[in-house]
Structure formats: C-alpha cells, structure tokens
Length: 466
Image 1 (cartoon, rainbow, N blue to C red):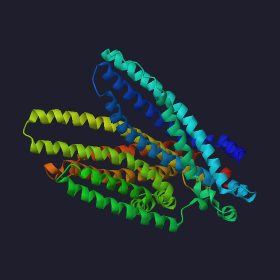
Image 2 (cartoon, rainbow, N blue to C red):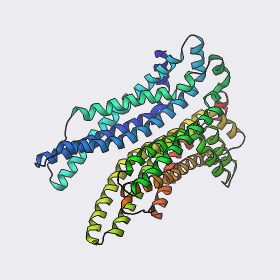
Image 3 (cartoon, one colour):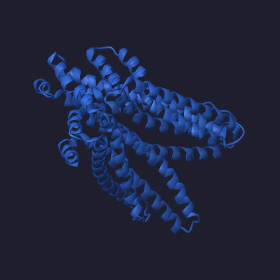
Image 4 (tube, rainbow, N blue to C red):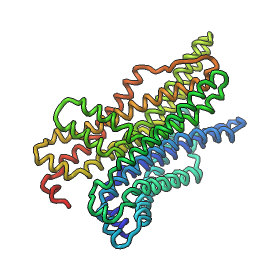
C-alpha cells in the first residue's frame, strides 16, 4: 500500500501543488509572526522595560489565534484537495480493497501523501519566511538605523514545521475518509459518483448546523444583555461565536446550495451559466469547503472593522475631548491595519484554495467537458463556465462573511462596551464595495488557469479515457 501511495504521489504530484502552496504560506506566516514577536520583545528587554515575559505571552496568545485561523483555512483546502484526488482514484482503491487492502491502510496511505505535502510546503515556507524576515529587518535598519538582528531560535523553525506536517497529514486523512470506507463492490460500480455526498449526510449536516448556530445565537444574545451592565459579557458571548461559526462550517453544504441555485438561475446568458450552477450544486460539499475558506477571512476582517467603528462611535458620543478621541482613533486604526495584515494570510490561503478547487473540478470533469466541446461548446463558453463557478463561490463566501462579520462585531462591541450604551453596527459602504469587488477580482484571477486547462482538453482523447 505504501508503494502504491508513493507511486501515485509521483505521478500526480501536480495535483498537490495548491496544497503545498497553502502549507508554504502558513509556514511563512508562522515564521514571520514568531520572528516579529522575538524581535519586538528583544527591543523591549534591551531598552530596560520590565515585563518582557508578559508581553511575549500576550503576543504569542494573539499570534496563536491568527495562526490558528490560517491553519484552519489551510486544513479545509487540503482536505478538499485530497477528497477530490482520492475520489478520482476510486477504481484503483477498489482493486486494492479486492486484493485485501483495508480502509485503515487507505487512510494510512493518504497520511503519507499528506506528510509529503506538509514536508515540502514547510520547507519552502520556512525558507521564505526566514528570507522575508531578514529582508524586513534590513529595510527597517536602513530606514531608521534600528540596529536590529535576526533573532535565531529553535521554535521559529520547529513550531511551523511540526504544525504544518501534522495538519497536512490529518487533513489528508480526513479528505480520503469517504473513499476509504467505500465497499469493494460499490466502488467498482459507482464511478466518481461515489465521492458525492448522500442526501442523508447533507441532512445530518443541516441538522447539526442549525442546532449549533441556534445555540450560538442564544449565547451571543445573553452576552449582549450582560454587556449592558458589565464588560464580562464578552465571556458569555465568545462561546456563542464559536458555536455559531462551527455550525456554519458543519451546515455549509445545506446552506450554500439554495444560495447558489438562486444566483445561478438569475444569470443571463447561454447554457454555460446553467452548467456552472448545476456543477456547483452537484458537488455541494466541495463547493461548501471553498465557500467556507473565503468566508472565514472575510468574517474576521469585517468583524474587527465593525467592532472598531462601533468603539470609535461610542468614544465620540460619550467623550468631549476631541484631541483624546483623535489619539485613540489613530491607535484603533493602526490596530485594525495590523489585524488586516494578519488576516490577509487567511485570505491568501482561501484564494489559493479557490483556484485549486476549480482546477480539480476541471480534472474531474474531463469527460463531461469533452462531451460538451464535441457538442458545440466553444472555448469562450468553457472559460465563462469556469469563471461563473469561481465568481459565484467567491461572492457567496464574501457576502456570508460580511453578514457574519457584522453580527460578530456588533455582538463583541456591545458585550464589551455596552455598559457605555447600546450601539448599532457601523460599517462603511466603501468597505462593502471593496470586499465584494475584491472577491470578484480574486475569483477572476483564480479562474484563469483552470479555464485555460479546460480548453486544452482534446475531446477525442478525453472520451477515450477509462
């Protein structure tokens, strides 16, 4: 089984390129984050400021949150990639099962693939992170004469490496889980459809998603009420945020299908748009993974933007010293910029995942695209079909992210500062334009390579594939 895994890894290494890139981004982010903390704490200690240890703990705690978000997004992308790759190997896996391979061995083989992806991505990302950190320190020294040096430490390399390898291996195992448990006879006769979710599975996801999200809403409402009398309301609202976002992730397939169907049916044009909507609905779980990866990054950016705007509105309402308000506003603005930079790595991971999802979809649908091309589908229509899929997924993810971000920002601000008075959510229309416009731009860029790949499939060659 290991030999089969290594052979398949060599022959289809290109299909894992996006996963390697995702792991590399996370590893580079981790190195940059850890190095920035070490350099900052080192400057404080050399300046004679007390409490360097507490500052390090606080910064590590904040950094761990944003690194965890990036890792979660990467895990969603990697598991989706492996689910698609292993669904394409269904016949080979069925033959292995017929000659005695167990589902545990199939999962073990997927972990070997994930281990290879994690090692390759970690090596690239750690190297890139060290080079970027060194370059950034050199720029700061040149501009300000700071005299900073690279803070070499074992955990700057070991922590990103361990996290990336473990997450890649586990995500690969989860992604291959459905194919690994398919019976030999069912796998031999069901083709690629075996990789599709059953209606009962989507129904269970819907039930769990509604239950978790409803529980989260109850906690968040209680947190807002508690925040009217104490800043401790955030401690009540925070579990609600966790429950609700987990509910959205679990129930995403059931949530996204109606939205995608409503959008795709309103598209004006040829049959390529109908085909785009049908494919997204048919592969609801894979589509939901991509939507969630976009949703997470947009939710975070929106949440902090709304919470920051509400806090500034409260300051202007309850404090008359305009100079003091302006100083706090500058500080809050800087903090929001820092948060946006930290969150941008999750958005980058989501963008890579969007392109990966489209590329894997094209590879899975070689026969379908070949038939359509032979029936008259033009190259332009094929590109528009892929583009429509990309735009729909990105816009749905961004729109849901904005809605959730506004909700979480509103709840967080009132649960923390509600004692100063209840404040409605604050969000600039320009932010909405920038967010949805950015989603469209990302989706267009992500569709270029998959669209080109769809047009390079020779119909006769694809139709001869078994």
